Length: 269
Image (cartoon, rainbow, N blue to C red):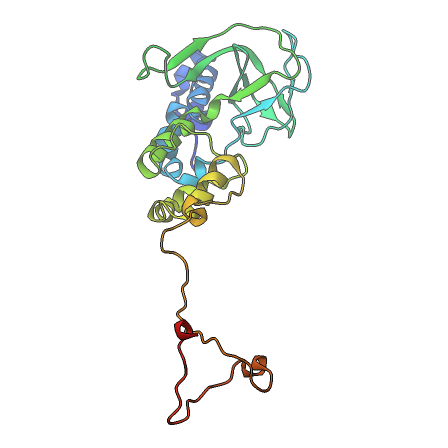
């Protein structure tokens, strides 16, 4: 695994001594600036990790949101949620209602060191201009338990995944797949799905991918009456008169005609 050095961790040492002496806060300012750019989904993060983000497994099955488990006051710096999986370990961006918040650390169920009323990209598509991203400047607000907490740090990955879907599985780019689906495997094996298009198996795969349910394909042709579909058998029947013995004993027996004797046909009797 390649270890990448972040600019924010070395920027202070790169400043000349006279700058650090005359402007003691400039190093701190630059550190915070680069930290904001190195957040997951930030400009520097994308540039430095583009080789990682082009891999499908990095874009799929991400946790895009979680839920508040306690009310959030205006002064709160710790936010309690159900789960913080797939949220960045530090300096991530979250959005609750209309407020954007950045945090400096997290546990499995809390975001800590929160900076309230933050600014950042809240969407990569503007409502009236789909080719323009939305940069929001927000203010501090209160939030109630049960509110949705969006993971803004994965917005870029969501857009990247949408482009990948458009190329690999066209028609699915705007569809939400079943939450229990291994989306990474589904995209990689999409070729097999399209090759089986129209078969019973393709319909079964489709419904599992979209809804997570097993289906049975019923074909109307299997329950239709078809002309000339009966199974006919041709037989030659004889009508006889019992003289001696039981004619039923002749079942599955072979009859032979003696020379000089005629066997009358059914219509002659």
